[in-house]
Length: 144
Image (tube, rainbow, N blue to C red; front, side, top):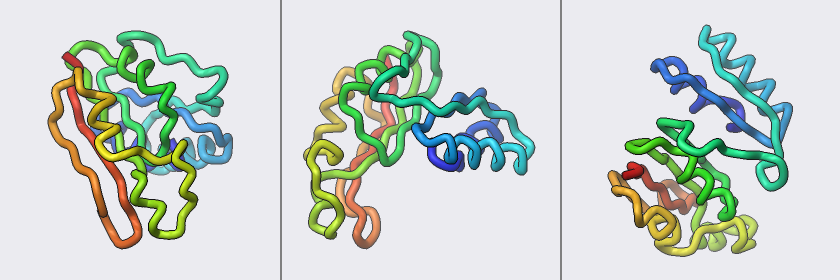
């Protein structure tokens, strides 16, 4: 969830928001931003790799930016209700050419994100350079 920019935006547009981040500082920043913008969000610190559970068919929208944990994707898919939307964007292997950490565990391969959601209806997909020194893949897809 980071500092809460996307969470607060969604809350200001009528969504009930539950945000998660590994950093308690990020959660505090998000809650402060929500208070400043006079919206309510639920936010908590949790280790997504250890003790986090996504309840099945509980969400209309799940968003994830700049974070890749491949083992979490099946749970995200199950966590969406039928007709729910996934919005996902993170760095791809091309990011390594810009001198950033090139650990492939944290970078998508070409078309990998699209493949993860091949059983969903793809509404938008992009992959490649977004800005100078930023390569990413992103998808907006609907669960059948």
